[in-house]
Amino acid sequence: MPYTPQEILETIQMVENYHFDIRTVTMGINILDCASPDIDLAAKKASEKIKRLADRLLDTVTLMEKTYGVPIINKRIAVTPISLLAQSAESDDYLKFAYMLDEVASTLGIDFIGGYSALVQKGMTRGEAKLIESIPVALSSTNKVCASVNVATTKAGINMDAVLKMAETIKKAAELSKDRDGLACAKLVVFANAPEDNPFMAGAFHGVGEAEAVINIGISGPGVVKAAVERLPDCDFRTLAEEIKRVAFKITRVGELIGRKVSEQLNIPFGIVDLSLAPTPAIGDSVANILEAMGLERCGGPGTTAALAILNDAVKKGGSMASSAIGGLSGAFIPVSEDAGMIEAVQAGALSIEKLEAMTCVCSVGLDMIAVPGDTPVESIAGIIADEMAIGMINNKTTAVRIIPVPGKKVGDMVEFGGLLGSAPIMAVRPFSPAKFVRRGGHIPAPLQALTN
Image (cartoon, rainbow, N blue to C red; front, side, top):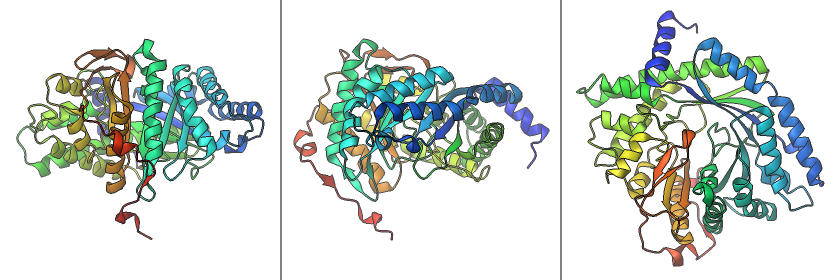
């Protein structure tokens, strides 16, 4: 379907006035054919393959940015979970893969590379355990490597041994990067129902059911949606939802165009467009401010979950009409540190971890970029993860936790991460211990809704 002059003009206005951008072009690459008992050889083969396939990624994306006048903020790569590749090797020195990925990312000039990952929702192999043990050092000693671990699915239930292990991993990663306020934890996500085609970091990996290589697009546009909502200050909800759908359609059309053109230039299949509204610390580019434009005095107050449900549903409906290749997470992100409105809501006392957890029942991910006191016990972090995994498991949706226990910081302090990661107020964690609960060990069974065969 051709693009009309009116659509082109609207896109220009979205870019110039409302912070619209393509948040990421992410190339997914399968590296399982690089397996070898010799870990050095496996890392070398993987490095060569990634560089060969992604050699023109940066130049191609830059060309598309100039050609169509739409900012493309990040260029990224995701690989198949490293735990699947690494455990074929006789050596346990999995850090070689982390350093290889970081070197590849630097050589290619991309922003992040994801896939230092493991899938342990039902059990944990020796290799997966080794990879998880290596995560704190891997993330604290590299710049561009991102890690994710899937510990729960609706079909499998929740691996509580893995939940506790990930809480310990997060604490270690924070301590090893304490000179940067626990920044390593910002590159680590714990998932339930992790999607295999997610273009967003830190959770991106290339699923084993995917093609040899694909191009996935992550769009953005909270500022565009906010402007649309502000144009209708007094309308009813149906009219409001229709307007959000219309805007989401336009945003997705641009993402589809960019994705297909990059795919065509690189001769690599086009994968999906992820519809997620991804905020930034910039004023006017906030999901929280969209909810407030709907009529809330402050994000986090009564009505917030309902407002987010309206937004998420309308974005998905509008975007799905613009593309037949919708995937990833698709909806609305609510990362605290990356959203100026969320930060203000926390500082005003309107937004707590508990309210954010309630909001994750209807948003596209989960508890994202939340900074907590550095002395938060491992068991409390495990309890927070378990709660979020339960929401994902029971509701058959993707949920995730990206939490940062900042060493030396207490509630009310601010921490600066910089760039798209923004700044975060240290949020309070309830002081009541779940230690006996989370240390029971074993597996929380899959829910009844898992029996769909």
